Length: 205
Length: 205
Length: 205
Image (tube, rainbow over all chains, first blue to last red; front, side, top):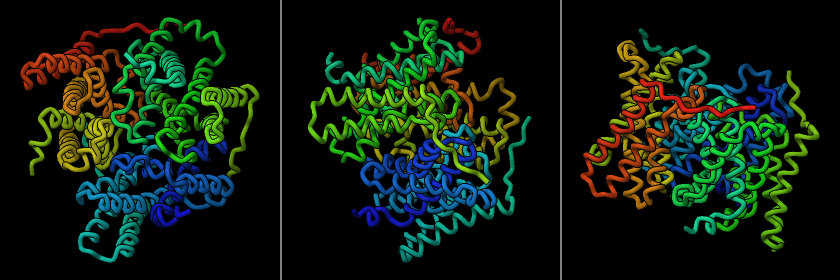
């Protein structure tokens, strides 16, 4: 099977990270094994399915290539087995979510550029790919999505996707650009949480 | 109008069952007649719209054939008029939802195979078709979707879709295969509720 | 840039109105500037993205034309800066939402007819375009969507879209028909709120 060649590394890592984050939310909500697997699969694949539908690539890759579903289900099983270990990290869902966010922002932007979208639209599709899985995860867990609640979230995805699009425009080396841009997004997200970056709220009547 | 020939029996029954389930959730939440009709229509048509979008069949059938909308709205009216009778059944939403789940799992898988998808992807699309309407219904009612909360739910849809795909592969008679596979899914779902099948939860720190 | 010619006036106004409504919901939930911008953008663009996906127009306009995103983000900034003034109106979210509802119902129906959909499907797509942004906004804010809670909501969108489709069928002047139909929808929605039109709830056991 050529799944691994079809499905680039960023996507694999992003799917695993989001799958784990979905599973950990399910575990925190005390859902059972199936709930964990379903939320892991939904979180790991929703961003990519949204991206493919918006690019008119039907059926989406998640239906023609078993890798995305298998990877996110595997992440669900790992989380099920290793929950106590994963929970030793401070804020494990936030950490995993930040990794998925950065990886999917760049992977989504990359595919959109490859599909011929202009850079602004490609950056936007990167952001949508990055935040889509987490939005579905949080909505299904009946929580306000963290893209709304947390300070620097969509902005981190935007920075990663824009950095990748700029490097691509300058014809910098593909692999280094993608890795650097993903790291940038993850770093911005983690720094904002660690340093408590705050954005203003609106003055009200 | 050739709606009935276009729109096979499984879809009709699944749309009615999901439409009724959406209406009963709306009634339980004390929504008014319009809320009931909207939630019946959304629950009855969302799975099919998702399926059509993923297969690249645009506009989706729900926009070109009046049957899905008319059927789910009719289900909403029936539920509105007959709520006290329907509520005499134990857990009416669960029952109707189980029927929709089994019917749509098989109908979704059937259409995906007809569209040329390989069996694993077709089974997956059957599951997505089956759970899509219920997820939208529960999210719109601000509840955690039962696909996450309840033990054997996505698994029942998976069993029905997989049984149909296997029978299709073996070239068994179409109608009997579809009916048998849908019944299997419904039976698994109802048995899991009746017998209280429990799946493990993750150990936590 | 030919964005303004591409993106007709109804869409511009509807995007602004929905963007403002999303921002005001975010402000009411005490989200910060980014949460406000994200919810403004999601509310302003979700209806149009759904419409484009259902018509098979990929990538959706929101990814190829910067206007929808820029307009809804601008609406978010205006709401952020002017929240105390906007909140002086009674029920500002309801008012803005009603305007977006009427404008998008007609704009969605217009594009669906232009894409060759038959009138019933075009009216339905107008309704979906009109209610899509508000549903996403309310779900992301963890509220039951007002299309379910409020009395005459989807019905107002339906009346506007149907009036436009009828006028189009009769070959009435385009601009006047669209403006009149949008006004009709807004008027029905506002009258239902002002006059407290009530619809029956289901009798229960």
